[in-house]
Length: 305
Length: 152
Image 1 (tube, each protein chain N blue to C red):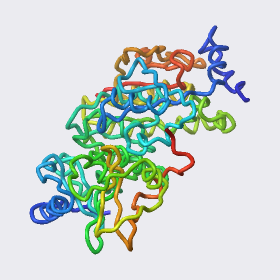
Image 2 (tube, helix red, strand yellow):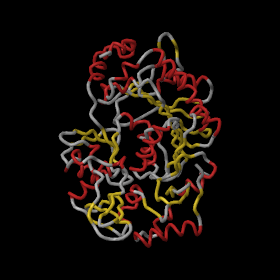
Image 3 (cartoon, rainbow over the protein chains, first blue to last red):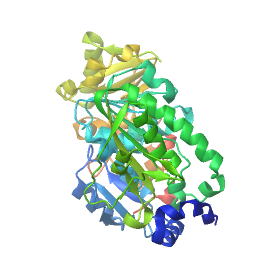
Image 4 (cartoon, one colour):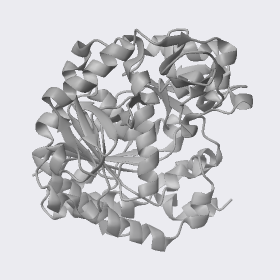
């Protein structure tokens, strides 16, 4: 286990560093989101419990549950086949909650595949309006499409464009934009140990550059006054606060406070490695594995100036 | 891909087929629009056609892949599941053993003509077609669950 790669974050976690490492080494229990487009929450829970699964509701989302898989795999149940449930990490359900899309709106998910958050957004909009789901990879789009079809999503338009150019091509079109950015995925270590082998400072820097141009594109695509939510599943400040700071300093956006009742969060950093960020960056949230027993996540809510 | 929004007669033709074959009330579609690209018909939210100008958007997919156009029309598995209890005709109720066969990609025995909708305890599972004394299972390979792995 290469957990020593996290040593650079010792200062961020302070006294809790060991606890952070301990949680990062623990495998993650699966979570599911019940697809309320197809079934009521209670009815679905009842059906899954009859199969011998035990479910525990996540405090921050009504239709999200942690699942104890005893001798039954959720992915192999009739309920999964029918699109009544979707396997999605608990922290990954947070960005759409912060985005708060409404019925009838036009929403963009700029880096959408495989579609966990996209289908959650569609569900929150009750299958109305338009959700444009963009991704650059053909293979990943295939899995996005099959997930959306299984869940019975009809308000989706799937595109395969370079996300960095999307905003220039469709400026000021969208009511809201989610950018769940490609990242070094440090926070996913509990699901995939391979993450640590691929992790390097070079990767972090490369991702940071890509994320800055994707976030600029997202801010160009949203209407003036519209909301952009930026999220990653990484701990690295270069891919989180530094990216949002770049957007704030370029004069495109202001940071808004993020509140998710039921979820334990930490404020964003205003300084890293001797580099000072805008004070408003503390309004972002950091989700740490030891706080909610999830993967690590970062979420920022921006409003287009 | 180019998408054409189906209006007027082209739309009525599809709704007529679904009413005739499967007993789906055309009223159900008042919140939805239909589009065509190549040999595929898509079901989408009304807003996509009214606000989205899908004809001019470089889309890979719009809404839900609903029907295939060949010699005739063929409802997709996702399309049948989406319609669910609105399907009133051509229903074949299956038991547990048959369900397991269907989910793992095997065919069923049966005599008849045309398409049939498999239903298990009220849930629409997918579509089959009568061919030579059997019901050919049309559930896509990507969605099957191997028999030995079926849970519950």
